[in-house]
Image 1 (cartoon, helix red, strand yellow):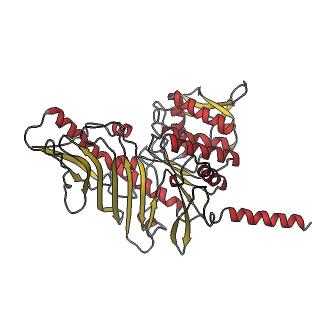
Image 2 (image 1 turned 90 degrees about the vertical axis):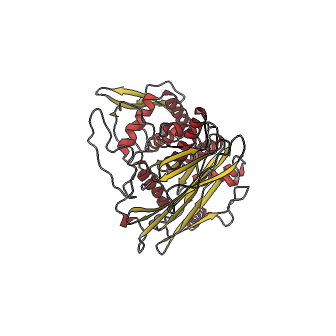
Image 3 (image 1 turned 135 degrees about the horizontal axis):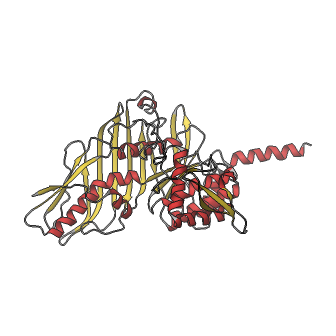
Length: 462
């Protein structure tokens, strides 16, 4: 007897119960990357000169996520503008994250095929009968002439039944349509998968059993099958970008008729409308962001509705009873912070924030305070951070957290990127238990020391 599983349990429900953390990323023939592997940590930092391939890691993840969520078999799909009006204020659909051009502008010069792979842990907050422990997902795709031509996947999970328990491997690939069965000895059940022709990877799952199985056991098997089916999308949807373009450009924005679930939107105007909707509808998040801003910038915020179904943010000094003023009139640095803090506040524990240059327009002290907040959230709330930075102050704060034993050295990975003859070369730097980097951080403190030496020499010569 067999049944095909309809996704009766919504993917959003599983997002609430299954926090995800990336452990490995692999790119082949993607832009400057001939063959690059990243072994991730709770805080993974990318440093190096401009145009050395750091941003390409983020772009590859977002392209795959976009193609999977949109259920496409093309990696570079382009985007299309919406027609905004009073009821629908956004410029782009929520599933459109990145517009990177044609496939020929993404594939490495002289090559025809891109390979992408991602691995991540998928622990579950809610136990289910046959899989009470964590699951690891390992996914790989190959893209030729912009089309998905190969996929491979494996789920390693902890199975438990009346007669047997232990780690099981459940995989699929191009050689057969149905995966190797995940045998559940207690009821003689098997679960299989029908791979998809799209970047979502799994079209459907099936389960079957021998003999008579009580209805409650059938329901448990169905839940397990849906969990397997949603695993690839869970892994890809767990990645949340904080784009480098941030800040308020207007005094007020259209008030959306529903709160946004994320700020994962391509256009700055759309991110701003989503941000204001989150703060307007979700008072606990507004209070949390206001408290973080009080520590980082000495201000508190509150939402104010404007005529014409518009909304804005007012701010007041954190330790003074003064009338509120428009937050959009605050300094450029303060304008950056909500666009960093709100996405982090909305990211569930165990999921990943891709953060581009958090230091932009921030005073060095604010950079350090913000970085310490990242450390705290990574440690206490299991949020994962991928940080692309050019800031010595961000690096200082992270290494100092290791030195003070706030996090172990193994929780921090720093990768140095270089562009060598059109090829991204990526090296993971060693970090000792005292927060030291043997050999130093290439291109950072030595540059500052050189400039300081020149400056002191110039002063002495006068």
